[in-house]
Image (cartoon, rainbow, N blue to C red):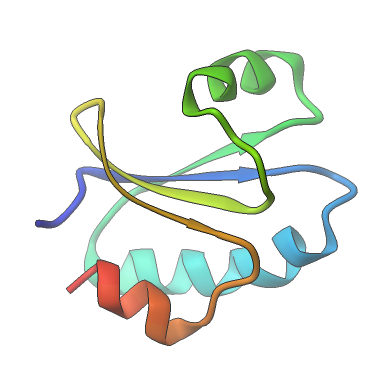
Length: 86
């Protein structure tokens, strides 16, 4: 099932987040799925990330109208993104 959006949780100090974000942006654009970036360095974004129970960064959540469809954590590659965004 295709998500209505991708939520990407990052932090300013997260090297893997910065390395993975360009790929996530590219794949989401190709699949026509909007991406929402939550930066844990921004207090408003941090509060919005709390309900997601983030335990690792980056965390990438496929969201369908407020319901989590899937979750990926860490530096993921193209194959992992393609598998969940089929």
